[in-house]
Image 1 (cartoon, rainbow, N blue to C red):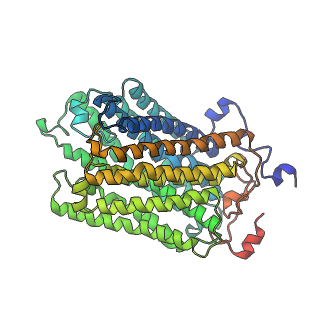
Image 2 (image 1 turned 30 degrees about the horizontal axis):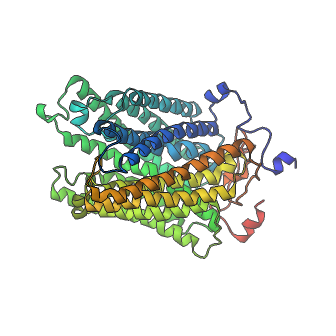
Image 3 (image 1 turned 180 degrees about the vertical axis):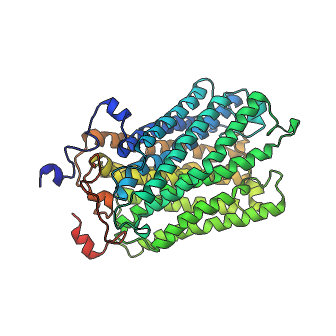
Length: 541
C-alpha cells in the first residue's frame, strides 16, 4: 500500500484533477459543484451577517439614533432575503447534498451532471440580481414581499430583488429534481430503500418539497412584479384584488420551505449521532417515515401564519390542529436521537458537540412553534420578537448548527485534511453560548410586547436588547473561527486518514478526498445501515 493510499489522500482526486479556474467553472463533478456552492453561500452568509450586525447595533439604544427608519427597513429586509433564499435554503442540500449523495449511494455522479452545473449558474445569476438591488439602495418590504406595500407603496428596488428570488427558485427546483432521479435510479446493487442513510431520506423528502412547492412562490413573485409594473388587480384591493391572497400563496410555499432548511439538517444530525454513539439509529424506519411525514404535513399548516389576517376561527382551528400534528414526527426524531445516545459509547468530538447543540436548540424552537400554533398565544405575540426568537431557534440554532456539524464531520472527506481540535471545540461552545445570549432575551421581549421591525422602542426594553446585541457579537466570533481554521487547514492542515471517525457508510469506503469518479468499482451493499456491531468495528481501518 502506498503512502498516499494509507493516509487516504491519493495523488489523483477531485481537487487535483485540473486545478485551473476554467476547469472549476466548467466542471460537472458533483463534488466540485458542492464546493462552488459552499464558497458562494459563504459570501451571502457574510453579507447577511453584516446586516444582522447593523440591526443589533441600532437596537442597542432605544432612540433609533444610528440609522433612519427607511434604512433600518432595508437592513432587516436584505438580511432576511440573503439569509433565507441565498444561504439557509441551499446551505446543506446544495453543498453537502451535492457532495455526498452520489457517494452515499455508491454512484459515480448525479443523474444529470450538466444540469447540476447549470443549477449553480442559475443560483449565481439570481444572486447577482439581488445584489444589484442591494447596491442600488436595497429593498424595504421585508423578506416576505407583503402586498400591497410591495406592489403599490414601496419606492425601493423590489423588482430586481424579486427577480433574483424568482431565478434562484429554478436552481432549487432543478437540484431537487436531480436528487430525486439520482436516488431512484443510481443506487448501488443491494442498496434497498431501508438500507439508505437517513441523510439520503432527508434529502429525498426535501427534494419533493423543492419540486412541488417552489413553483408556487415563483408564480407569486411574478404576480407581484406584474402588478407593480402593469397595475393589475391581483392583490390591490382598490381595484378588486385581495392582499390576503398573496399571504395564502406565499405561506403555502414558505412554511414547507422551513423544512427545506431543516430536514437536511436532521439528516446530518442522524449521521453524526450514529457515528459518535457507535450505535444504529434507534427506530430507523420510524425516522425515515418521519421525514416524509414532515414533508407532507408541512404543506397543510400555512394558515397558522394568518390567525390575524381575516381568517375565520374555524379555519384557524383546523390549521392549529394540523400544526400540532406536524410536531409529532419532529418529536419522533428528537426522542430517537436521544435514545440512540442512551447507553452508547458517546465521544465528544466537534461534530457531536454541534449535534447536541442542535438537538437542544431545535427542541426549544419546535416547542415554541407549537405555542405559536395555538391561536390564543399567537394572537398575543403575533409580529413581536417572540416570533423572531422562535424562527431563529429553528433556523439558526437548528439549520446552521446542523450545517456546521456536517462541515466538521465530512471535512476530512471534502478536504482530506484535519482541523485543530481545540479551536473547533471552542468555536462550538462559543456559538452555542452566543446564540442563546442573542435570541433567548427576544422571547422575553416578545412576550412583553416589543414588536419586530421597529428601530426604536420604549426604554424598559433596553437591557434585554443590549444583552441580545452583546450575544450577537459573541455569536459572530463563533462563526468567524471556523472560517479561519477551516481555510487554514485546507491549505496547510495535516493529511488525514481515509476514515478518521471509524464511521460506516459508502462515502467512507473511498479515499479522502475522493477520486473524480468516486469509486474504482461500483460497490455492492450487503450489510445493514449503521452497522456498528463489534464485528463490523473490527473491520474498520
